[in-house]
Length: 124
Image 1 (cartoon, one colour):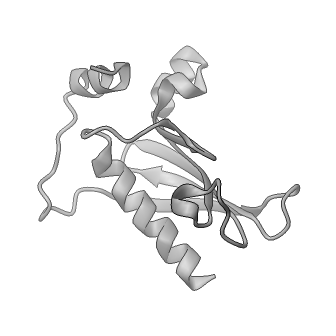
Image 2: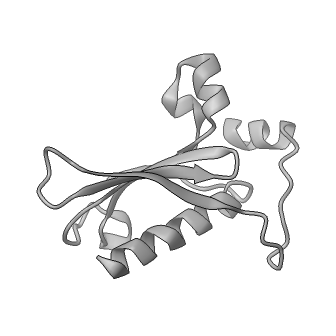
């Protein structure tokens, strides 16, 4: 079992059924990337976790599914603060490739964030 799966299991993360609306996503901030023309950073929360994503202006080979999501991280802010270790706090991390794929326990947080990012992309 991966360390993050053990962590999520120890936190006794409830896995809501598909019919329940317990997963809440919210964008807190949106800002232009100063180094990549037309790219936008989105950050926010998904229940108790935080996320950050880099959305490109055009699709790229290294982006998720060869689309416009170049980076996506979902992490536990309490673990990040306690350990001062960003990657160690991540339950999902995509940085031009998968570093930490969403586990079965993390998928319930990944899918709503991914859907929200896809909606953002479709609107922009």
